Image (cartoon, rainbow, N blue to C red):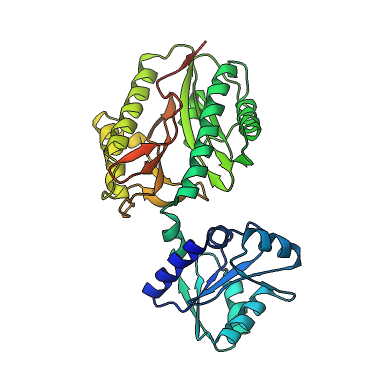
Length: 356
């Protein structure tokens, strides 16, 4: 954690920030290691202060011993202002995307003349590059998702409800060590598989359905995210065609992912392949997104993805085709950008699995 604070201070220096208030819980966890539900971090060139209330004093000492602990008894932002005055802070940078308007007004009132400076993505940019400790946990989260998939395909069958499959995946991942799923599990079958975010419903799985399962394990604070589409029974010609196109688009994209290309360029590989085969209008979302403490974080693999990929980034690669009159296919893996290319972290079989 001290290394992360060191990196943050270098970033602050580059941006001419003398004091920085970290209020977003995920960013606070990244910087401090503290997982409690209430607290903020105040970082300067020489001080690293964690402000929280009585409930978390022992927890902070255990999780963030490198931080100076300050207990607030009144409003937490009032204590922030008191610390700023004690440190001689002239201007306080804050996370403009995470502090509400009313909180900012309150903060300015407590600061009473100390300037505030809205900034964006200071910690988020640091979070894009995962350290070895983070990568170890993400690998474990990916393994849990893989194992859950291999188990669910032993159990899934016509007659089950989508909700039953989603619940079983949740139970399996928790039994394997996850604290929860990374997000509301998507199980979408038949025509519903054409819904990219078709959260599991009461629909009964039927023979002839494509079944898309999008799920992930939340493990020790980090998320995995995997999608597999399977077939109940034998696919018809069109179902097999769109599956093969999506699979090849995903493989082509992974083969081209490497340091130095942008998220937009990576997205273009999958998008161009799908478009060349006549389904460009049926692929309406980005090819992928960053993965870490949050299941959706920077960088993006999309037409808006201007970030240059670099070693240590973890992204998803998840092209899809969605036909309302037929159903849909999405295939997704978690991928680590390496020095020379990339490494796929999820290994569950993605050739078309047919279950009678």
